[in-house]
Image 1 (cartoon, rainbow, N blue to C red):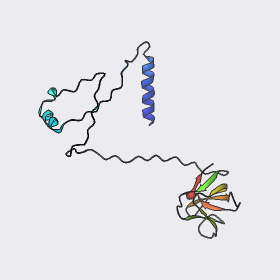
Image 2 (tube, rainbow, N blue to C red):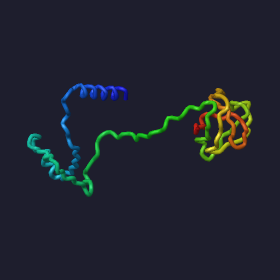
Image 3 (cartoon, helix red, strand yellow):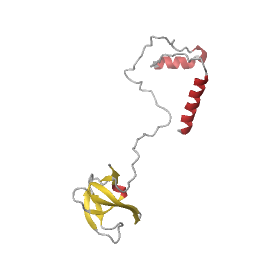
Image 4 (cartoon, helix red, strand yellow):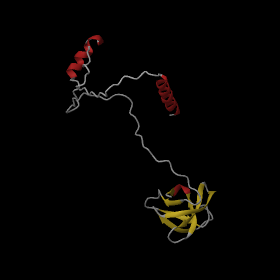
Length: 167
């Protein structure tokens, strides 16, 4: 990405250094060509020099196929689906968070950080809001944050994996 930005900057710099020269103005042109399979096979049999492209001018006819030919085969690699996911905001003391990712389950809020040697004080369903008042502490392979329930003002420790910053 950095190389692309640097390349674009270099091109813009070079263009701006050409004092007095202006780039030719070109109108955008969109041309969709749907070929008849019979004509394609005829064209393949001819030499490449004999195959002529349609002339381009200001009036471009756009042809949209009603149906793709049955023998049309798509070739090439299958590209993976791109999913854009927002970068999570890191949890910090003073942040507002909500329970996220537990689905129909509930998040255990414990008296001390950790799975062993702790007791469940209460359980919070998906979307429950909390304020972060302490932490983080590492225990039993998890990062734990001390949370305070906004409605009932009860406090406990929750696993960071199921907390999402909201404010």
